Amino acid sequence: MSDNAPAGEPGVRVVHIITGLGVGGAERMLVNLVTAPSASPIRHTVIALVKGGFYADSLRRAGIELHEMDVRRGPSAILALARTVALIRRLAPDIIQTWLYHADLVGLVAGLIAGQRRVVWNLRCSDMDLARYHRTTRLLVRLLALLSPLPRAILSNSEAGRIWHQRLGYHPRQWAIIGNGVDETRFRPDPAARAAYRTRLNLEDDVIVAGMVARRDPMKDHEGLLAAVAALGRPDLALVLVGRGIDTDPVLRDLAAACPGPVRLLPQSDDVAGLMNAFDIAVLASRFGEGFPNVLIEAMAVGLPVVTTKVGDAAAIVGDAGLAVPPADEAALRTALTRLLDEPGLRRQLADRARPRVETRFTLTAIRASFDSFYLSLVTK
Image 1 (cartoon, rainbow, N blue to C red):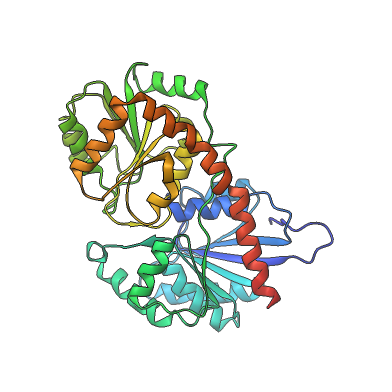
Image 2: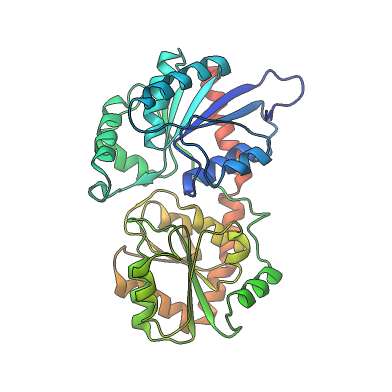
């Protein structure tokens, strides 16, 4: 079991409940949070409703206590809920922190049955186009809006996320905003990694590489980015797309074939920090749904200039270290890329601002301290 409490301290136990531990921003932030060094008397335990996932082994290697409930559809879900209630009673947490919508519902119900009154929801998105998702997801969000006064508090990782959920009808007893943080000792400029990945990807030194790290998902605009790159007609521009579902998508393969420069379609990577060093420009092209995209601060920590669409808090996160354009606007995206291709001075200027911005605003240490302070405030009231 992980115990981050200093010797002699009784400790505050936070049990995190998350839908699953697959690749995603919420999952990555949870792992970063509970494994980050801290002097606070807080102990973390994780309950995953779905078994397995990309980050499960990361938690185990870090010594974090992990329970996997293996929830499935149908009547067995009731048994899984009962097991979750029993587990919460045994763990006797001071706080239940939930991540993602399904876990919000399960954590609230299980917590109330188990007599745990400090349940905190954690919102990770904004401006979702719910019409693109399954009907049960739309119904779940509406139900959560009705139940939103019941948690002790609701966290959001972005101001945009708070505003959007308020419009949906969320009206909690307490709101709190805590953004994401990045381990700047891991995400950093690394010339050796740059050379190694350029060689591995067969990309010449004189090619300008734009890269986007994002899973295949309706909220991500891979099609728009590929169309913009194809329309530029620049053989000196290479594009690297990396994420779950990217390398196997025939639509992306067809669009990549129309680009004059090299295009690499890669699966999810367990070394995003190293891979990003092969980029000259980081891109986040999203249509909707982002709250606080981790990938932006990761790229900035590596020292990359950023082009992002104005989704969630993205423009505010990037600030003067990148260019922000409207979502689903291929012409604007093309113009931003052209500026960075044709103006190396601007590219260097934005890159020089990127890492210092992370170091003063978005380090994992600072964000962990914000979470710790928030949790401690709940148990002392």
